[in-house]
Image 1 (cartoon, one colour):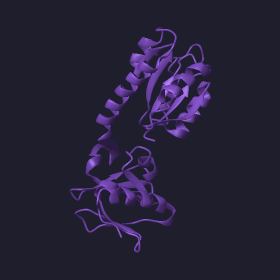
Image 2 (tube, rainbow, N blue to C red):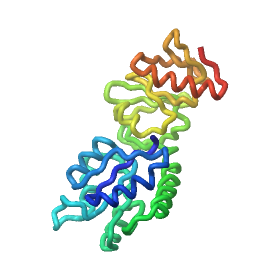
Image 3 (tube, rainbow, N blue to C red):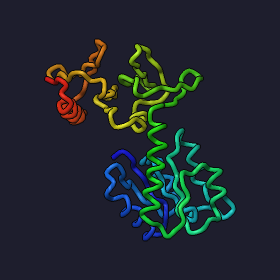
Image 4 (spheres, rainbow, N blue to C red):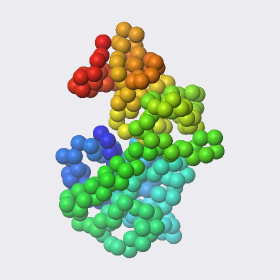
Length: 244
């Protein structure tokens, strides 16, 4: 699963249409459906989807408040919001949607063709964004090319990014926070380590360590993450890299 998504809509037919349209796309998985605003807020904070299909007329909002109130609420708790796709019967909320930078605005009744076009836009934008990670470090905002990250190391409530040029960049977020943001080739192998599998040159099962290309670094892995390491091994073997 690369793109978890949730649906916020009390119209079961509409929710089913979205799920059916996406069921043959293996990168997408529905991780929840909410029928009111409060449940939707809790669900997004718990599941951290990358894409949200939102019906602005979902019950729960005070009539005097914006139909996009949930997006404003999320900014209190999340640094990066998921992309929102508006699914509704009327164009009445379109201007407000533009102001909130929604990914797309689709009128009901939905069609699979409309949804697939939206997914292509989402994937294009996400791939462009996916190569750069932004975070706060010592009062500044740092932009890190994730293709140049060898591995991440936890240090209490901070995380060190070990870069291919030898630099170490400290971020004031936990390792778990970044685990939910990084692409699939970053794999957690220890409570304190996430590695970029593109830089793994060897797996030492006897020593319970992974070697990192062009360095002397040996990253330990723990028994609780051994299944993850086995998956890395299988991938490396297919690419004719050495493992023992």
